[in-house]
Length: 155
Image (cartoon, rainbow, N blue to C red):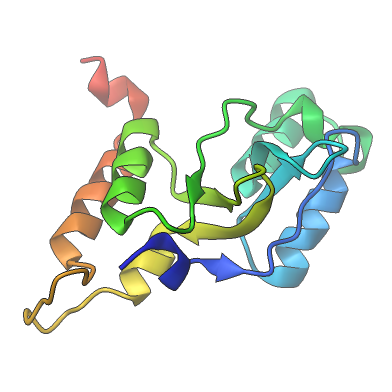
C-alpha cells in the first residue's frame, strides 16, 4: 500500500503573505489540523498547524488576523509523494516528529495530506496481514516517536 491509497485529497493551501486567520478558517471549515503553505507557483514551501497558530497567538499576544502565515509556518518542509510506501512515510513522521505530511506531486505542488489518523483508520486490526497492509504496531511506533516531548529525548 502506498501513500496515495490512504491520504486525504482535495487539500487547500495558503500563501506566506496570507493572514494567519485564513489558515485557521480553512482548518475550521474543513476539520483539519494543518494547511500546506505554497509559493506563487503553487509549490509547497512549508506547513502551518493549529498548534502553530495557537502558540503564535499566545506568545506574541496578537490575533491571528494580525500575523501572516509566513511568520509562523514551518519552513523545513518534510513531504512525501503519493507513490511512496506507507513505511517510508512513517519513518519520516518518526524522524521529524510530525503527525501530518503534505503529499506533493513531481513539481512540488500539494495534492493531499497524510496524517497519523489516516494511517490508523486504514490499519488492519485482525492480525491477518497481507503484503502492503498497514500494521497497527507500525502506527504505534510512529505515534510514540512523534509524541515524545523534546525535553525527554535530551535527558
